[in-house]
View (cartoon, rainbow, N blue to C red):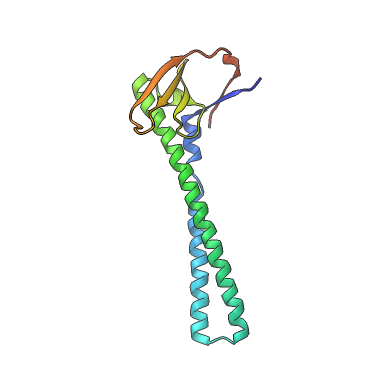
Length: 153
């Protein structure tokens, strides 16, 4: 039997707090290292055998910076998906007059069709493709409620 996982608002909100500060710090450190090498090279006019090593290190640092920027953009996309789910849950909370901490969802990204557990009832939310403000919400029955697993923080 496969369990159907439903995630709480707090769990999804906790997923949005990533180590963005560490990424920015790493990027700043890489840029400072590049700046240091450029200044050192310009002031001392290093011998040619060291300029090749510094040039290769600079290329490596630029490559690592590019990887970090790509990783940051990917994480930002995932964070936007989590924020979309949180917005759906807040909207559903207002509409059904259920506290947001009593709403669970089985999706971690805003899909066209998502299942929600609000209080004691299950709902299917279906969004229209072009307009996220318009959706259809219908109450559904779950045949085997024992297969539902609630995941908190």
